[in-house]
Image (cartoon, rainbow over all chains, first blue to last red; front, side, top):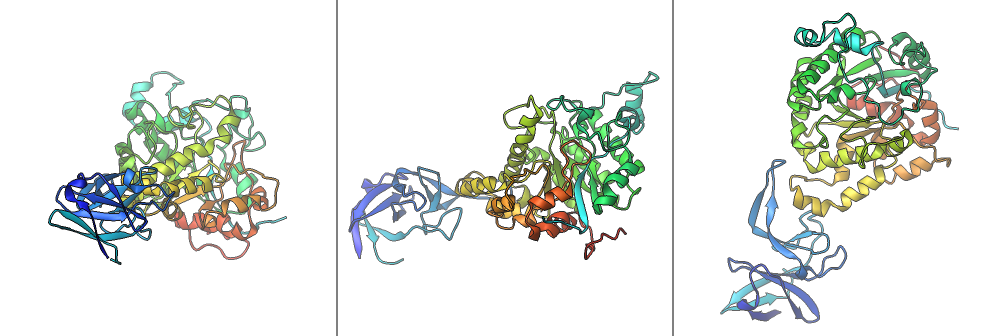
Length: 119
Length: 372
């Protein structure tokens, strides 16, 4: 099921916005490049609303003491304990086996569409 | 009552010169000898012990009944050590840890570098090789890690040196900080583990709250320092950078381990953001890279009590290594430890864990330690 959740302008860049679809809360994040992500609005750690957190580029490091950003893998951080989840697939940045459901999105004619089916 | 009769590896046997200022001074470089000499009975200002907590403990904190002449600080006499401890306790291998590591943190880095060289040369010439059971640690100036790395490379190839001692902290920064990494690089290069020892009067890091005014305060809180060091090694990625490095922390006790592991693992999601080079759970690093000496061990008065607490950490029996602290006043005898630890842990804790860490092999089979 594909749902129209609003105009792209309704989603300020990197500011998660909650949309409610069929009783489910989904956090929608639009990035400056125009890509849009949708993720269940709940952190499995202590059930906080993820949309009240913040978005950063992903972090990567191959050498202790050195790190870089990975803009292709944005991360939504929970406001309570800073747990991070990759918006691309919902996986925890600490433990990839911990995963929040994400949804496919598309932008069409300035509208943001969320596919509620399985990814 | 559980008893252990097998071979013992003791990772904390303190030894010292009878008169440190004079005996160590004999090994100083000519430059430093000339700088500080000039009197018939010179005072070299080598930091032997900085005092601090424990001033009420007589015999300078050493056991009066050990070491020979009670008028002289115990730990200088190898024959006494053999007679009163190594032989009756069935010590198969022992790690000599110096009396205290105060001299590693002298405030003058140049002099401290020279003192560490002198101490290592003294150790090689006067102790190591005198008893087949005993092995030594390389002393390094913790106030100057680059010089410490050079010292490790200077003497690290000598077969009786089986590790590196980090005791008093000359910089006041936890030992995981990158400033100390040259020491780990050199140690890893030579396949030498690190032994971190607790301190008395370490101005930088005796306990988390500051210097203790009383020995009970200090002993009760020894674990604080170890917890901070372990956390520091992990967050700074020491084990990612030096994947073969092993670190043993001794005279901190170990019953605090579960709380530390729980807290570190709980913080892992945050850790992966602040230290993205940390690729494993802290508990996994601890299991693979960290070992803990046993002493001082609390007697909970409940059979199996300590085991019940510590075994909440998976693999805890592989982490803990027997340490006596001979001949200091808070020394733990192996028979005492055997009573408070689960019997199924004995062989690992008293022998196998430390033997694996320091490369002592083959581990004797059966009860008696055949010294080779």
